[in-house]
Length: 394
Image (cartoon, rainbow, N blue to C red; front, side, top):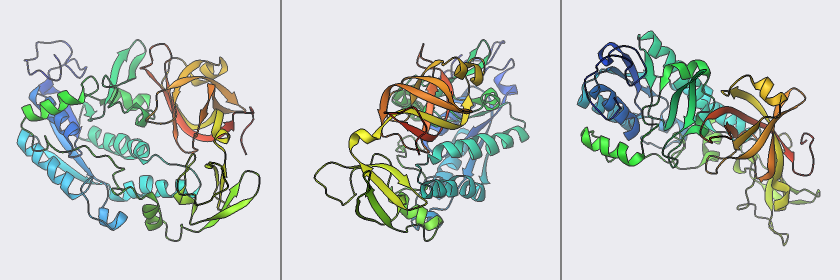
């Protein structure tokens, strides 16, 4: 039985992998108010599962950016409640605003202020959705937590595995690499094998009130794309200026705060020296933005922190052996060949070919080089190693 069918259960293992009927299987559906999570709740209800919908109230747009919006705030909560009423399931709203601010928004601001480039969606999955919400689901007696993420969970010979979504254009594995083995045993991703077009068709089939709702494109608490404005709101006085310095030591100009810059940035430097210049390093303690030619962006390796390993065997044995992996350092680019290793006692990734414009604080997600779909885990980029050396960058 698939998630798009409503056939009666005839024994054995149900579609979520439990050896009991859907009616005897309680599922907490994380409902954000969008199309994807709404379809998940509707599908599971149609299959006969005991579904409870939960929506997290994460923040107030007005408090975050002095602008009213919808995502994760009032309108989305209203939409999720309407969907729950439509399909006939209980629905609860949990106030996680303080937790979200501390673990996601403040981390976002502090990471920028440290000269790194944060990914708040990963932190949200780590701390709020797959930690606090998962714990709440267990307290409600649920057999599992189901979400609307586009990623596949499969049963392997050594337990559940995480794989890229069937619809490559919707794959969210870059944002879910930090899912632990314990979490993976409990979470289900019913949309992992479906294309987005079919999900939209299911929303119409179930007559969901959010069927025509557009997908959110922004970080939820940065609806207008102004990262610097949010950082300054969370950390007043953070927009202190400093020098724009060439790699050769020349001071080329002034900037209005390191929070306005990321590695690889070319536009908005407002300096002219007759050659294209890119941000190659952000020295947060001295408030210096360091620029140089494009070749200075090339990186031969990455040192990782908070590495979550989901591959076969142990991380130690894989790194000791220099195991080959595919690694993705930006969500919008395909994985590239690399090898695991060590730099002292810190895990390191060595690219087969140098990569350009890799930013500290971003994620490096590891995949199985044999099939390209299984996620071996990943970590956050602690430091980069320049293409012309195999020592830790200063």
